[in-house]
Amino acid sequence: MRDQVTMAAVSADTHPEQTTGNLEKIAYWVQQAAESGAELILFPELSLTGFIPNHPLKDHDSWLRSALVQARKIAEPLDGRSVTAVHTLARKHNILISVGLLEDAGNLLHNTQIILGPDGLVGRWRKMHVPMYEMPFYNGGGMPDVVQTPFGRIGINICFDALLPESTRLLALQNVEFVLFPFAADPPPATPQGWRQWAEPALAARCRENGVFGLACNLTGQINYAGANQNFHGGGLACDPSGEITAEWPVTTAEPTMLLTTFRQQSLQDARSQPEYLFPFRRPELYGPLAAIGEMDIRH
Image 1 (tube, rainbow, N blue to C red):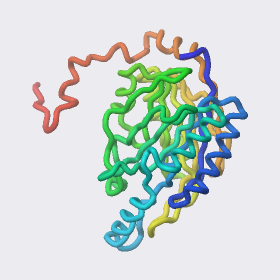
Image 2 (cartoon, helix red, strand yellow):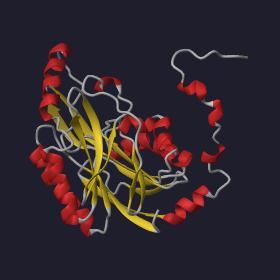
Image 3 (cartoon, rainbow, N blue to C red):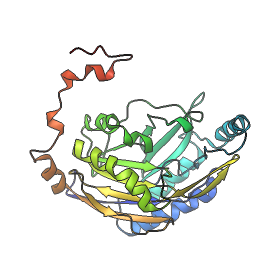
Image 4 (cartoon, rainbow, N blue to C red):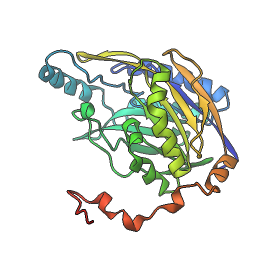
């Protein structure tokens, strides 16, 4: 990576079927980030097309049928109008922008996070591990990529992916340096601090296990759509390769906010030079059973 790089993370209040308004909010924060010297700005999971609430209170069958229709309605392809609009913003402000969308991939939908730069699409990541309530809406993605940017190597784990160690390790095997963690999660208590208490142990562990920088942000706002609603409370953080939190969320209320942080190459070198740097101690020759399908034959 370069000597240092400044990034921004935004807790945005975007909504399904309000893509024009979502783009206006994204444009505002992109300008704020660019004026603050950020070279990359991270928006939450599904921030471009909107998150579909999945906690119905009434007839589940009726809700599901309606919600699936609405999901198809808001999904967009990677070369669609909204992605093109974000590319225009990236070119205008000479910045990398990471946004999430419900991706129309033809016969399947995916929860996808992309990075767009002045020259277009830099990379695409599809959520690999789909939690139970979200399974009706999209399919799990494949092997996550790591992309080379002017300031370092970047990969993405989307929300639930961050809770499973294998997700970040797949990126580390490709020499990732920065991992972006976009969330749309509503753990109690309903505050940015509540989100941090829930997310920080996993994020700090992923960064320490693999010797990588981490940047995270969470969706915010009340979402009512397709007969269900959820309330998200924002939050975010930055983590260094030793697992230490280096930038905390600047507000205590669930309002759209931006976190600005600078990552320095020296921190990466220091963490990877310590005896406690865990990545070199892997024993891949022992891990075959981890990838086996079915029951493992346990030998005593």
